[in-house]
Image (tube, rainbow, N blue to C red):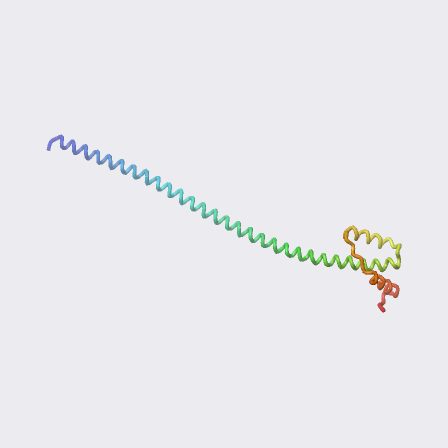
Length: 147
């Protein structure tokens, strides 16, 4: 073998070694890029999963809060309706009693004051039927005994 053949073999071997090294470097760079992309995708997936879990917890908490508010509102509305009924009964009772007392003592200032207060509190007055007032007057005159 001549020195030229050995030299050519060295050149070819060197070129192959250099190409192998470059190929390995390129593979390493692209592999690193793929690994970075995969890591980034994993982080985004984890972040998205955590965000969805937080949103689910918030939605569940909001739903429970709305249910509690609706329950409390229902209770308050029921109490309000009961108080409306009670207040109407109180107003009618006062009107009945005060009308009967006005027939007995028309100048009584306490009745006038109470009537003014109730008219301020309840702008839509209810007046009892006149025959009912007359019956109360008769009961009051008889000393509270019904005939």
